[in-house]
Image (cartoon, rainbow, N blue to C red):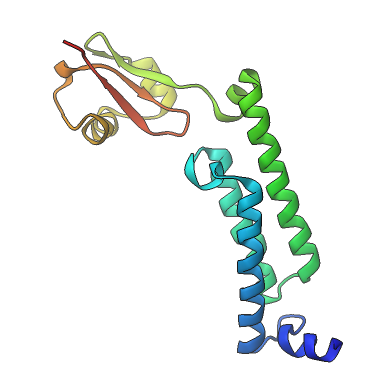
Length: 164
């Protein structure tokens, strides 16, 4: 049995096509399980915290496919990353302080017909960045129709139209 497993999955970095494909299949299925454990927020909300899990899982799991690291430690490390992410997600939902610490706060960039330069500097955005977000979210580039422009915690720019 051990001989069959070694033939299918190999060991070390000298893997043939069958072994890399076998590892890829197992890692793919395992990653599906990890995503279900992590929750929808991992690939939906797209805050910096959520981007971290995408980057880390891709990096760590890739090592198992190419044989750069031992298979079992990669699986355990990936599970730990997902559990940390899930725990942080839970704490963000249940603690405003923790949410602000990890994800930051929204920043108002435009209000009462004026750009707020201090907040633009803090958010590291220029007027054209803001206008791009306005065109995308409000479907207009006419600022006289806009009540407020905000950079959200995930970095997206949102425009709130005036009500008439």
